[in-house]
Image (cartoon, rainbow, N blue to C red; front, side):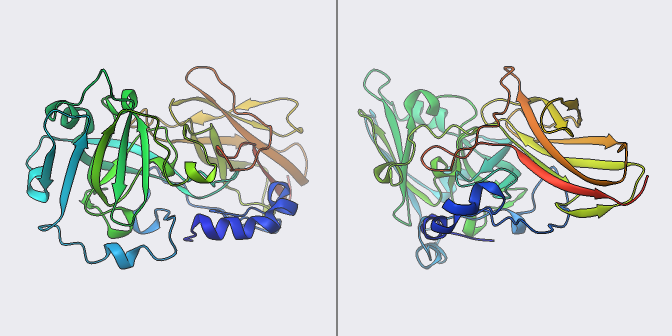
Length: 336
């Protein structure tokens, strides 16, 4: 489902009453009612990858982009301001990277995140070639065809994992995902991963982008996230064995551990994690459970990142810096 953040803010009037006690609003519309199980895949197909934009209809500005006429301007605190065309981008040395993107509006158990393999060019290499002034640069600003703008610190821009991407899961970047060029910064919420880029500016100050000017975070670091995909919420499942499966994502750090609780978060059981293909992506986890008796059970999931940080159970809303809290579901065991 596609929602703009403007629609999220409209919906959040209702979410203020119920959003964090069962009914999810914003990027994700969950439910207090039965939710079917979701298919858990390591890679998200392009057609199913979440889409959120700050405008209601950005495609009027981007749907007719002519890749041969498109230009990327690099300016600001650089020795050699440069304008690159589509062919210039394709002729540069590419690299592939598996990275997860996540909407800052995503609530516990939400669906507005996706994992893909991206191909693009190194932002660090490009900035070095144009002579970015490392003594004066503080931020790097990205501006898109749709009028959107945001920035990341210059020190972050100069790390090897930051990419200007033009392929997504082996296909030309879809228009709704930023064709012809978008930013991929692993570990930062989607608001920082600017799409439809036409201009990069190396800036000697602390730049506040579109959503920062409206009170949202300028940091954008993703909080630890975990989700149960199956069984579904309020689903009747046969015994005596129940298989739990889902994903977990650590933002800037990979996931070391996923745990489930069946007793109101008093104790935790370790799940098995499937080997990820990248430190920048979510992990898929599994847990086989033998319920002690038939009936309803409340189940919670949490994750631990590679630094040992445990996902918090404290509930916070998305604004200004992303939601926190644990995903809980109710399952009903038919028989043992």
